[in-house]
Every structure is written in C-alpha cells, then in structure tokens.
Image (cartoon, rainbow, N blue to C red; front, side):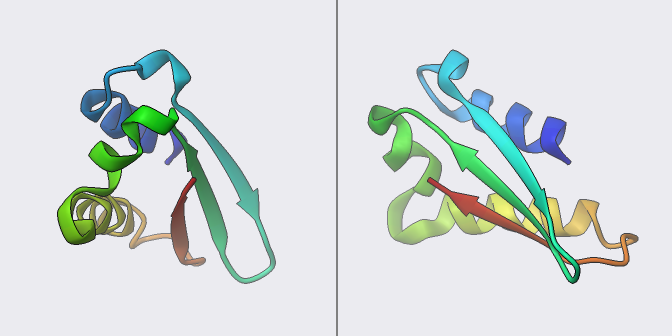
Length: 75
C-alpha cells in the first residue's frame, strides 16, 4: 500500500522528492502516514478535502481483501 500511496501523492505535488509514507501496524488497523512539503499540502488535501477523500477511497478499495482496515493520515 505504501507504493500506491506514494505514487498517487507524487503525481499530485510539485516536490515529489519530499513525499514519504510511513506504515504503522497496530493490533486492529494499519495506519499510513503521508508526509508532503508545506507548499504541497493544499494540493494533496484539495478544496473541501475532496482529493484527500479520493486518496482514502482508492487506498480503501485496494485493501478490501485485507483483514485489517487501513487508514490514511495526511501530515
């Protein structure tokens, strides 16, 4: 999932070299933390959070077969 999230985020931002994803696996869920440059934060979130919701929907659809839910946090 890290590769998918990294690819999507790098496609959206002006500074793709500053995109990083860290994965934290807990007992009940997996959390993917997306880190981007300060200048690119608006591009990843989008107007009224539409792009962020779309990113979360893509990741959720890609992980439906997993037993644990996957959450995306944008920082």
